[in-house]
Image (tube, rainbow, N blue to C red; front, side):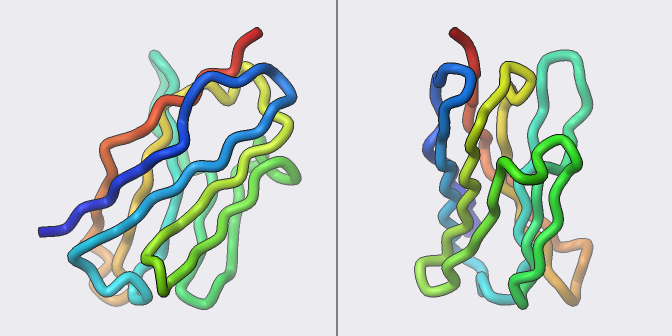
Length: 118
């Protein structure tokens, strides 16, 4: 059974930091591209950041320079370090794993709430 379990969300003041973690089980973690998506109320889910098997990264323009994605294949965990948080970063954040060969094989976590507010 495949599971992606996120943690690390919460309430933070503007300008603060959070680190999200997503730990996988039931997959060969190193064979997957990993991503963080977010969905704010009334908006579509959007890609925040992604990291390939080889460690290449890409980011949404809105988070470049503030967020950093990383992965630890030994721990089967992907991280999202979020700094200089803004109220517009408020959303449910989802972890995604997409197989690099069988690209239709994709899994989602249950989501973790991030709220940026004073």
